[in-house]
Image (cartoon, rainbow, N blue to C red; front, side, top):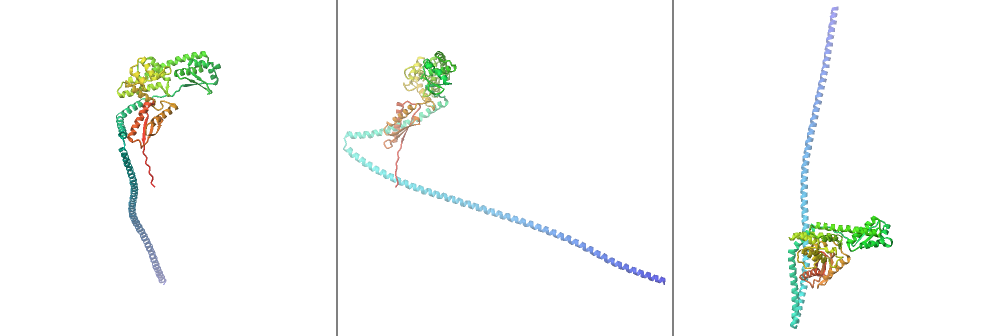
Length: 528
């Protein structure tokens, strides 16, 4: 029983255990099933999340692609729109240019029309003026016809001598016109053949040689260092200054001007000796009559040596040979001689080279031309010591010291005092005039200048038909106004030629004088 009980208990236990095991198995199965279900649900959720993420990524990609396509489409369409807009703008600009050109053309046409209208008005006015002029000429012709009829009626009642006189007067006027025409024609021919060549020779000579000019006067100034020295120069009661003037042959002017003493003399050599002597006395300080005589004698020797050296240098500068020593010394004296402020020695050298240049152009002897030019003013070296003009004195000196006949005549006739036998004489005269008339070469006094201008105007005013005459350009030109009613164009040329001829015959002047004759007819009308 016990065993049965034990068996029963074992069965019961087994049943219980089995039941418990079954229950545990069921519970374990349920738990496993629930766990499996839970695991399946998590995997599904993960899969769903992955699909959702993939769907979202695909949506973003599609969206980005759509946006890119839309943007590119927008850009393309915008570019197309911009291109079309630019084309439209270009067309508008072209249209604007065409319109502007049309406006310019219209403006030009308007200006042309305005100009045509103005020219038409001017032409109409001109036609009216011509009609008035024709009417005036018609009236003048009628008056002239009436006058001629009156004259014919008078001639019918005239004697033979009266008619002959009227006829001769008219013939004389016609001959004057024809003569003026011939003179003008011949002058034009002469100018065509001569003027160009002469101008070329003279201008070439002037351009190839140019010399300096100095302006000196008949006085020299010596600086005095102090008033005490000025008193010593004067000396007690003027003893020293009288001794100085006696030894030098000059005038010494001592005035209130501080620091200056003026030495005056017409002889340039004496003036130079006096100036140098006075400067030496002031430097030496020993001023008394004996010392003055000694210094003046020494200075005279120095100046004589300098004169000789200047003459030799001038001969060398002019490149001539065989000049007498006395002529050489006289050339040196010309260094201290002035003419209208022009240094005569430099003027002589300049004339020599101008003669050489022109002689070479003309096929003459250049050396002989230089010699004639250098010695042409030699008489000015002693013209204050010998009576007569410097051309005559110079010719005598050249003849005395064995110069050639061409040189003698050039010295005598370069101012037209004698009739020229050699061609070198007018050549020297031309070179002399060129040198004297160059700017800055000479200086005239106011009185001589005014006299020359008045003489020019006076000569021009003596001719019939001349209303006014003016000397201009420092006397280099004369402007002559004639009456247009009494003097015609042909007679004007004849009057100008005769005025120039009278000036050549009656006046002496450097260079040339241009005669300009003006004939002007003014007609004034008033439109009312």
